[in-house]
Amino acid sequence: MAEKYFVASNSGGGFCSYYEGAFDTRKFSRIYAIKGGSGTGKATFMKDVAREAEKRGYSVCYIYCSSDAQSLDGIIINEPKIAVLDGTAPHIYEPKTVGAVDSIVNLGAFLDENLLRESRGVIEKVSLQKQRGFLAAYGYLRAYASICESIDILVKPAVNMEKLKKHARRIVENVQTGQGNEKNLLVRSIGMRGLSSFDTYYERARIYYEIHDLFDSAHIFMSELYSALKERRADMRISNDPIMPRRLDAVEIEGEGLAFEITNEGREGSRAINMRRFIDGSAVSLIKADYRAAARVRDSALSLALAEFEKIKKHHFILEEIYGAAMDFSAKEEYTHHFCNKIFENN
Image (cartoon, rainbow, N blue to C red; front, side):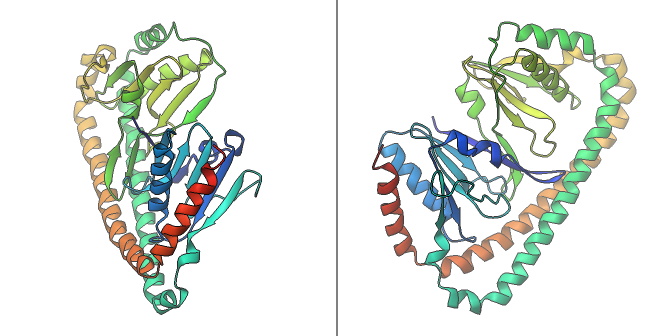
Protein backbone atom coordinates (compact mmCIF):
# COMPACT_ATOMS: atom_id res chain seq x y z
CA MET A 1 0.00 0.00 0.00
CA ALA A 2 1.36 3.39 -1.00
CA GLU A 3 0.87 5.94 1.76
CA LYS A 4 -0.53 9.24 0.48
CA TYR A 5 -0.84 12.48 2.42
CA PHE A 6 -0.91 16.26 2.15
CA VAL A 7 1.33 18.42 4.37
CA ALA A 8 -0.25 21.75 3.47
CA SER A 9 -3.75 23.09 2.86
CA ASN A 10 -5.72 25.96 1.42
CA SER A 11 -7.54 27.20 4.49
CA GLY A 12 -9.78 29.95 5.81
CA GLY A 13 -6.60 31.61 7.06
CA GLY A 14 -4.76 31.34 3.74
CA PHE A 15 -2.07 28.83 2.82
CA CYS A 16 -1.32 26.57 5.80
CA SER A 17 1.93 24.57 5.71
CA TYR A 18 3.21 21.67 7.81
CA TYR A 19 6.34 21.38 5.69
CA GLU A 20 8.73 22.20 8.52
CA GLY A 21 7.57 19.25 10.62
CA ALA A 22 7.23 16.80 7.74
CA PHE A 23 10.69 17.58 6.38
CA ASP A 24 12.57 18.25 9.61
CA THR A 25 16.27 17.75 8.82
CA ARG A 26 16.73 15.79 12.07
CA LYS A 27 14.54 13.01 10.66
CA PHE A 28 16.46 12.48 7.41
CA SER A 29 19.88 11.45 6.21
CA ARG A 30 19.42 13.57 3.07
CA ILE A 31 16.89 16.11 1.76
CA TYR A 32 16.77 17.34 -1.83
CA ALA A 33 14.79 20.54 -2.49
CA ILE A 34 13.71 20.98 -6.11
CA LYS A 35 13.62 24.47 -7.58
CA GLY A 36 11.93 25.36 -10.87
CA GLY A 37 8.71 26.95 -12.11
CA SER A 38 5.43 25.34 -13.19
CA GLY A 39 5.99 22.93 -16.06
CA THR A 40 9.64 22.14 -15.31
CA GLY A 41 8.73 18.57 -14.41
CA LYS A 42 9.20 18.64 -10.63
CA ALA A 43 6.37 16.18 -9.99
CA THR A 44 7.55 13.86 -12.78
CA PHE A 45 11.08 14.00 -11.39
CA MET A 46 9.81 12.90 -7.96
CA LYS A 47 7.66 10.14 -9.51
CA ASP A 48 10.70 8.82 -11.39
CA VAL A 49 12.82 8.81 -8.22
CA ALA A 50 10.02 7.09 -6.28
CA ARG A 51 9.63 4.47 -9.01
CA GLU A 52 13.37 3.76 -8.90
CA ALA A 53 13.29 3.53 -5.09
CA GLU A 54 10.45 1.02 -5.17
CA LYS A 55 12.21 -0.97 -7.89
CA ARG A 56 15.18 -1.24 -5.54
CA GLY A 57 12.92 -2.51 -2.73
CA TYR A 58 12.40 0.67 -0.70
CA SER A 59 9.01 1.84 0.56
CA VAL A 60 7.89 5.34 -0.37
CA CYS A 61 5.48 7.80 1.23
CA TYR A 62 3.89 10.20 -1.27
CA ILE A 63 3.16 13.81 -0.32
CA TYR A 64 0.68 15.43 -2.70
CA CYS A 65 0.08 19.07 -3.55
CA SER A 66 -2.82 20.59 -1.62
CA SER A 67 -3.78 22.69 -4.66
CA ASP A 68 -3.46 19.83 -7.17
CA ALA A 69 -4.14 16.42 -5.64
CA GLN A 70 -2.76 14.68 -8.74
CA SER A 71 0.65 16.35 -8.44
CA LEU A 72 3.43 15.54 -5.99
CA ASP A 73 4.87 17.99 -3.48
CA GLY A 74 7.35 15.49 -2.10
CA ILE A 75 8.36 11.89 -1.51
CA ILE A 76 9.83 10.25 1.56
CA ILE A 77 11.93 7.12 0.95
CA ASN A 78 11.55 5.46 4.32
CA GLU A 79 14.43 3.07 4.90
CA PRO A 80 17.39 5.28 3.91
CA LYS A 81 15.40 8.30 5.20
CA ILE A 82 15.71 10.39 2.04
CA ALA A 83 13.26 13.17 1.18
CA VAL A 84 12.80 14.84 -2.19
CA LEU A 85 10.47 17.82 -2.15
CA ASP A 86 9.20 20.81 -4.09
CA GLY A 87 11.03 23.79 -2.64
CA THR A 88 9.23 26.52 -4.60
CA ALA A 89 6.42 28.90 -3.60
CA PRO A 90 4.08 28.73 -1.78
CA HIS A 91 5.84 26.05 0.30
CA ILE A 92 9.32 27.54 -0.01
CA TYR A 93 12.02 25.30 1.45
CA GLU A 94 15.51 26.67 1.96
CA PRO A 95 18.32 24.28 2.97
CA LYS A 96 19.51 24.74 6.57
CA THR A 97 22.50 22.40 6.51
CA VAL A 98 23.69 22.69 2.92
CA GLY A 99 25.72 19.71 1.80
CA ALA A 100 25.56 17.92 5.16
CA VAL A 101 21.88 17.00 4.88
CA ASP A 102 20.09 19.07 2.29
CA SER A 103 20.85 20.09 -1.28
CA ILE A 104 19.23 22.04 -4.11
CA VAL A 105 18.10 20.33 -7.32
CA ASN A 106 17.70 23.08 -9.92
CA LEU A 107 15.44 21.91 -12.75
CA GLY A 108 15.42 25.50 -14.00
CA ALA A 109 18.85 24.72 -15.41
CA PHE A 110 17.11 22.87 -18.27
CA LEU A 111 15.02 25.89 -19.30
CA ASP A 112 15.61 27.92 -22.46
CA GLU A 113 15.56 31.40 -20.93
CA ASN A 114 15.39 33.09 -24.34
CA LEU A 115 12.02 31.44 -25.03
CA LEU A 116 10.75 32.50 -21.60
CA ARG A 117 11.80 36.11 -22.16
CA GLU A 118 9.64 36.13 -25.29
CA SER A 119 6.66 35.05 -23.14
CA ARG A 120 7.39 37.43 -20.26
CA GLY A 121 4.24 39.52 -20.76
CA VAL A 122 1.96 36.49 -20.75
CA ILE A 123 3.76 34.94 -17.76
CA GLU A 124 3.39 38.11 -15.70
CA LYS A 125 -0.27 38.57 -16.65
CA VAL A 126 -1.30 34.96 -15.98
CA SER A 127 0.74 34.79 -12.74
CA LEU A 128 -1.10 37.89 -11.48
CA GLN A 129 -4.47 36.37 -12.41
CA LYS A 130 -3.53 33.19 -10.57
CA GLN A 131 -2.45 35.17 -7.50
CA ARG A 132 -5.72 37.13 -7.47
CA GLY A 133 -7.65 33.87 -7.81
CA PHE A 134 -6.03 32.49 -4.67
CA LEU A 135 -6.83 35.68 -2.76
CA ALA A 136 -10.49 35.41 -3.80
CA ALA A 137 -10.62 31.68 -2.96
CA TYR A 138 -9.13 32.32 0.48
CA GLY A 139 -11.73 35.02 1.07
CA TYR A 140 -14.54 32.55 0.40
CA LEU A 141 -12.86 29.89 2.56
CA ARG A 142 -12.57 32.47 5.34
CA ALA A 143 -16.32 33.07 5.03
CA TYR A 144 -16.93 29.31 5.09
CA ALA A 145 -14.90 28.94 8.29
CA SER A 146 -16.66 31.87 9.92
CA ILE A 147 -20.09 30.39 9.20
CA CYS A 148 -18.93 27.02 10.59
CA GLU A 149 -18.03 28.78 13.84
CA SER A 150 -21.53 30.31 13.94
CA ILE A 151 -23.03 26.86 13.37
CA ASP A 152 -20.97 25.64 16.33
CA ILE A 153 -22.63 28.24 18.54
CA LEU A 154 -26.03 26.93 17.42
CA VAL A 155 -25.29 23.22 17.76
CA LYS A 156 -23.09 22.87 20.86
CA PRO A 157 -25.90 23.48 23.40
CA ALA A 158 -27.67 20.42 21.95
CA VAL A 159 -24.65 18.15 22.53
CA ASN A 160 -24.48 16.10 25.72
CA MET A 161 -20.84 16.91 26.48
CA GLU A 162 -20.61 14.74 29.60
CA LYS A 163 -21.74 11.64 27.72
CA LEU A 164 -19.52 12.49 24.77
CA LYS A 165 -16.40 12.99 26.92
CA LYS A 166 -16.96 9.73 28.81
CA HIS A 167 -17.28 7.77 25.58
CA ALA A 168 -14.19 9.40 24.03
CA ARG A 169 -12.09 8.51 27.08
CA ARG A 170 -13.46 5.00 27.40
CA ILE A 171 -12.73 4.14 23.77
CA VAL A 172 -9.02 4.97 24.13
CA GLU A 173 -8.48 3.82 27.74
CA ASN A 174 -6.29 0.90 26.66
CA VAL A 175 -4.02 2.94 24.38
CA GLN A 176 -0.39 2.62 25.49
CA THR A 177 1.47 5.65 26.80
CA GLY A 178 4.00 6.95 24.30
CA GLN A 179 6.30 9.93 23.85
CA GLY A 180 3.53 12.36 22.89
CA ASN A 181 4.86 12.73 19.32
CA GLU A 182 2.57 14.09 16.61
CA LYS A 183 2.83 14.15 12.83
CA ASN A 184 0.62 16.41 10.71
CA LEU A 185 -0.31 14.14 7.79
CA LEU A 186 -3.50 15.28 6.10
CA VAL A 187 -5.80 13.10 4.02
CA ARG A 188 -8.07 15.86 2.68
CA SER A 189 -7.57 18.98 0.60
CA ILE A 190 -9.42 21.61 -1.40
CA GLY A 191 -7.86 22.99 -4.55
CA MET A 192 -7.81 22.89 -8.34
CA ARG A 193 -9.18 19.33 -8.38
CA GLY A 194 -12.03 20.26 -6.04
CA LEU A 195 -12.41 18.39 -2.76
CA SER A 196 -9.90 15.52 -2.63
CA SER A 197 -9.24 12.77 -0.10
CA PHE A 198 -7.08 9.69 0.45
CA ASP A 199 -7.94 6.43 2.27
CA THR A 200 -4.54 6.15 3.95
CA TYR A 201 -5.72 6.11 7.59
CA TYR A 202 -8.35 3.48 6.77
CA GLU A 203 -5.89 1.35 4.83
CA ARG A 204 -3.27 1.46 7.59
CA ALA A 205 -5.69 0.66 10.43
CA ARG A 206 -6.37 -2.70 12.02
CA ILE A 207 -9.33 -1.16 13.89
CA TYR A 208 -10.95 1.78 12.13
CA TYR A 209 -13.70 3.97 13.57
CA GLU A 210 -15.92 6.19 11.44
CA ILE A 211 -17.35 9.17 13.27
CA HIS A 212 -20.67 9.71 11.52
CA ASP A 213 -21.41 13.42 11.41
CA LEU A 214 -24.71 15.07 12.29
CA PHE A 215 -25.33 18.83 12.30
CA ASP A 216 -21.58 19.40 11.89
CA SER A 217 -20.92 18.10 15.40
CA ALA A 218 -18.41 15.29 14.72
CA HIS A 219 -15.42 17.59 15.18
CA ILE A 220 -16.50 18.05 18.83
CA PHE A 221 -16.10 14.32 19.46
CA MET A 222 -12.78 14.30 17.58
CA SER A 223 -11.53 17.17 19.76
CA GLU A 224 -12.37 15.28 22.97
CA LEU A 225 -10.81 12.12 21.59
CA TYR A 226 -7.65 14.04 20.77
CA SER A 227 -7.57 15.56 24.29
CA ALA A 228 -7.89 12.09 25.83
CA LEU A 229 -5.02 10.81 23.68
CA LYS A 230 -2.90 13.83 24.59
CA GLU A 231 -3.41 13.02 28.28
CA ARG A 232 -2.08 9.53 27.58
CA ARG A 233 0.87 10.99 25.65
CA ALA A 234 -0.06 8.82 22.68
CA ASP A 235 2.07 9.01 19.55
CA MET A 236 -0.26 10.19 16.80
CA ARG A 237 -0.64 10.94 13.15
CA ILE A 238 -3.22 13.69 12.81
CA SER A 239 -5.11 14.98 9.80
CA ASN A 240 -6.03 18.63 10.26
CA ASP A 241 -9.21 19.84 8.59
CA PRO A 242 -7.92 21.57 5.43
CA ILE A 243 -10.15 24.65 5.72
CA MET A 244 -10.21 24.91 9.54
CA PRO A 245 -6.78 23.62 10.65
CA ARG A 246 -7.53 23.83 14.38
CA ARG A 247 -10.05 21.04 13.86
CA LEU A 248 -9.04 17.44 13.14
CA ASP A 249 -10.75 15.12 10.70
CA ALA A 250 -8.68 11.98 11.39
CA VAL A 251 -6.33 10.56 14.03
CA GLU A 252 -4.17 7.44 14.03
CA ILE A 253 -2.43 6.11 17.12
CA GLU A 254 1.03 4.98 16.05
CA GLY A 255 1.84 1.34 16.78
CA GLU A 256 -1.73 0.53 17.86
CA GLY A 257 -3.33 -0.08 14.47
CA LEU A 258 -6.15 2.18 15.65
CA ALA A 259 -7.59 5.08 13.65
CA PHE A 260 -10.56 7.45 13.83
CA GLU A 261 -11.93 9.53 10.98
CA ILE A 262 -14.89 11.86 10.47
CA THR A 263 -16.75 10.31 7.54
CA ASN A 264 -20.12 8.86 6.60
CA GLU A 265 -18.58 6.55 3.98
CA GLY A 266 -19.55 3.26 5.64
CA ARG A 267 -16.28 1.57 4.72
CA GLU A 268 -16.04 -2.20 4.91
CA GLY A 269 -14.99 -3.47 8.34
CA SER A 270 -15.29 -0.08 10.01
CA ARG A 271 -16.88 0.57 13.41
CA ALA A 272 -19.32 3.47 13.68
CA ILE A 273 -19.59 6.23 16.25
CA ASN A 274 -22.84 7.99 15.42
CA MET A 275 -23.11 11.56 16.71
CA ARG A 276 -26.86 11.05 17.08
CA ARG A 277 -26.22 9.29 20.40
CA PHE A 278 -24.79 12.51 21.91
CA ILE A 279 -27.37 14.99 20.57
CA ASP A 280 -30.58 16.02 22.32
CA GLY A 281 -33.31 15.73 19.70
CA SER A 282 -35.65 18.21 21.40
CA ALA A 283 -32.87 20.82 21.62
CA VAL A 284 -31.97 20.31 17.96
CA SER A 285 -35.58 20.81 16.85
CA LEU A 286 -35.38 24.38 18.18
CA ILE A 287 -32.41 25.29 15.98
CA LYS A 288 -33.07 23.23 12.84
CA ALA A 289 -34.33 26.15 10.76
CA ASP A 290 -31.40 28.38 11.73
CA TYR A 291 -28.96 25.54 11.11
CA ARG A 292 -30.33 24.86 7.63
CA ALA A 293 -30.19 28.55 6.72
CA ALA A 294 -26.59 28.85 7.93
CA ALA A 295 -25.61 25.62 6.17
CA ARG A 296 -26.94 26.98 2.86
CA VAL A 297 -24.78 30.10 3.18
CA ARG A 298 -21.77 27.97 4.21
CA ASP A 299 -22.22 25.69 1.20
CA SER A 300 -22.53 28.73 -1.09
CA ALA A 301 -19.20 30.08 0.20
CA LEU A 302 -17.61 26.68 -0.50
CA SER A 303 -19.05 26.61 -4.02
CA LEU A 304 -17.64 30.08 -4.71
CA ALA A 305 -14.21 28.96 -3.47
CA LEU A 306 -14.33 25.88 -5.71
CA ALA A 307 -15.28 28.08 -8.69
CA GLU A 308 -12.20 30.23 -8.03
CA PHE A 309 -9.98 27.15 -7.87
CA GLU A 310 -11.37 26.09 -11.23
CA LYS A 311 -10.24 29.44 -12.70
CA ILE A 312 -6.85 29.08 -10.97
CA LYS A 313 -6.43 25.68 -12.66
CA LYS A 314 -6.76 27.29 -16.09
CA HIS A 315 -4.10 29.89 -15.26
CA HIS A 316 -1.85 27.23 -13.75
CA PHE A 317 -1.91 25.05 -16.86
CA ILE A 318 -1.23 28.01 -19.15
CA LEU A 319 1.96 28.64 -17.16
CA GLU A 320 2.83 24.93 -17.23
CA GLU A 321 2.47 24.91 -21.00
CA ILE A 322 4.75 27.94 -21.42
CA TYR A 323 7.47 26.56 -19.14
CA GLY A 324 7.09 23.04 -20.52
CA ALA A 325 7.71 24.30 -24.06
CA ALA A 326 10.97 25.87 -22.88
CA MET A 327 12.26 22.72 -21.13
CA ASP A 328 14.89 20.33 -22.44
CA PHE A 329 13.21 17.21 -21.10
CA SER A 330 15.68 14.75 -22.60
CA ALA A 331 18.51 16.44 -20.67
CA LYS A 332 16.35 16.45 -17.53
CA GLU A 333 15.62 12.73 -17.90
CA GLU A 334 19.32 11.98 -18.26
CA TYR A 335 19.96 14.02 -15.11
CA THR A 336 17.22 12.07 -13.29
CA HIS A 337 18.96 8.80 -14.17
CA HIS A 338 22.30 10.03 -12.78
CA PHE A 339 20.56 11.49 -9.71
CA CYS A 340 18.96 8.14 -8.84
CA ASN A 341 22.24 6.28 -9.23
CA LYS A 342 23.93 8.83 -6.97
CA ILE A 343 21.43 8.79 -4.09
CA PHE A 344 20.98 5.01 -4.03
CA GLU A 345 24.58 3.95 -4.63
CA ASN A 346 25.38 3.66 -0.91
CA ASN A 347 22.06 2.04 0.13
